[in-house]
Image 1 (cartoon, helix red, strand yellow):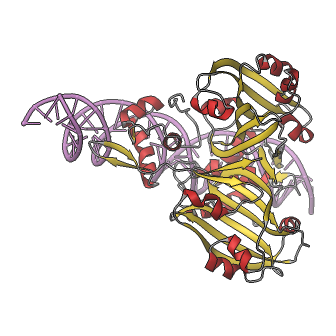
Image 2: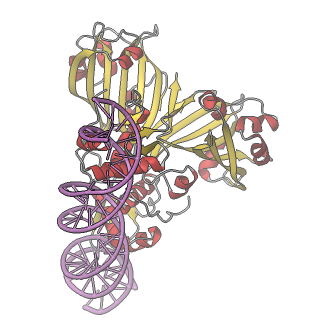
Image 3: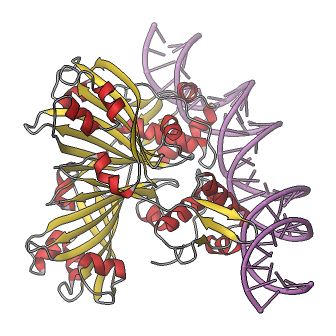
Amino acid sequence: MSGLKQVQRQTGVALWRQIADRIREAISNGAYDETGMVPPETMLAVQFGVNRHTVRSALAALAQEGIVRAVQGRGTLIERKERLNFPITRRTRFTAGIGDQAREMRGLLLDEAKEEASAEIARWLGLKQGDQVIRLETLRQADKRPVSRATSWFPAKRFAGIGAAYRTEESITKAFAELGLPDYVRATTEVTAAHASAADMADLELTPGAILLIAKAMNTDLEGVPVQYSISRFAADRVQFTIEN
Amino acid sequence: MSGLKQVQRQTGVALWRQIADRIREAISNGAYDETGMVPPETMLAVQFGVNRHTVRSALAALAQEGIVRAVQGRGTLIERKERLNFPITRRTRFTAGIGDQAREMRGLLLDEAKEEASAEIARWLGLKQGDQVIRLETLRQADKRPVSRATSWFPAKRFAGIGAAYRTEESITKAFAELGLPDYVRATTEVTAAHASAADMADLELTPGAILLIAKAMNTDLEGVPVQYSISRFAADRVQFTIEN
DNA sequence: TTAAAATGTCTATTGATATAGACAACCATA
DNA sequence: TATGGTTGTCTATATCAATAGACATTTTAA
């Protein structure tokens, strides 16, 4: 890998933020694994072609995220450098999928509502617009660190009580099982990226300007009948998707 | 869909940039299809809870991208509202994959080099570190609009001359065919997101702060022997990926 | 023709961003 | 214990980002 290059002078995104993103990426890629520390501020300033104070702003932001910790006289230590891998296959399951990469997996139910299907939701679930659906707002954590924020819709008739089941089981797979659906498969997944909204920023403990990986997914039962449509927002600096064909 | 909500006051990313992103997204989602115009500046200012001048900065950025065009006295017209869909399957091909969504597809060879495989490239291509590989830097366009910037590696021994073949055929699939590989399959794809580098910004004609969807892909021949490893960077506001299982 | 509605332009003010320089405080080690 | 390297803090200055208000210009429609 080549070293970090100079940042471009841009409008709209603060320099310190661009530099924070670059350093976060470098840490994630293991660029500083030898020392376990970020290079000195003065060196980073030269590398990026900016003032040392600008580098300090970037490092302060990373310290706020818990990624680095500055120690006066010694340097800036790297505290955390993970990126969870999230396989997307016909058998995609959140908890099992990244279960071996974290000690503790949790799924929190933030909100539950019964509502009428919009045209889009109806299309995905194979219902008629206006049919009753259950919407779950969930937050998934790995080792107490928020990983994704998802909005899921289920046919209300077939999956009444899925909210309560999810609240106790903390897993869609187990909630389905409790409601008499022992198995399901991932039919389609659409992946996009966007800036985080204010609400997602709060839930995912993101800093401003953060990027989301957005997966719109549809699951079906083994007969191909849609059972769930979900829009999951992942903190892009904490995960990657892997598609194995 | 609910209407646009207020933006959050953030640090590091300019308000006008956040608003530009939101409006671009709304246009892409067809929120203004009825009129073919963006709402008046004063109305947007109220919706986002900002000054009209801030909205004007956002619209100016979108005009610069060619997405809208302001006409004094009339309003701000929407010029373009596309997001190419890019299916990722075992038979993923760039040109064929989005060929029906654009009139003209082109693949430009920016650079070609023979080099020694790094540990990572060697691992992906099933070679030994230091084995000769050919690296192609390519830019793919749909209707003259840049869509992705890719770096690809090929085993040098097997695919000598792939640069020349790509330059004339403007397609990996056709270049492979010319070199005696009539068919290949997508083995794995890793998807991440990040901010655009300065170089990618220039090649993809992106505005500062833009987001990239990054796909690291490995293709094999029908016997499962790796033939290509590539890192493609897509302008996130112009594409989405679809994974069909 | 007139009025309303929309974008375009200008001035002014405040706070955030970025640069620059100097020096203090702290740590490791020769 | 002295020194060099590192982070922490302070002052100062210039530019960008955002708000605020006023008014001009252009188009549409009453």
